[in-house]
Image (cartoon, rainbow, N blue to C red; front, side, top):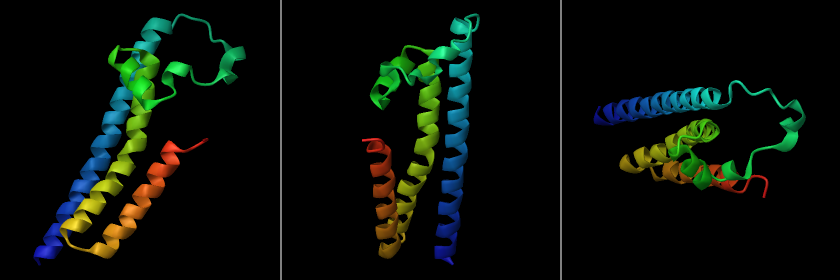
Length: 127
């Protein structure tokens, strides 16, 4: 019975992690969008430069955080998207901790493998 309680508690915590991660992400994106529109809302859309991609100052997480701290709208939107991406990754990491607490080493190993694959794909995408 104690194992069932632990399973339910871990499931509840993982559900809350996902819920609050998505809500935090949405809030940051919304704030970033409002800041961006406040500063650039009256500018005409530059449809010819749409394919130029992401500016250099928003291409790494470190730069995104640095620019977001300074209240830059585009950086806040990027930060919100990074938080959205990080939410399921954090869920996998916390799942591994939950399995370790239950001493279910097979699931710990499988979950850590999934975590490594996720992190590798995030940090080496397009490389």
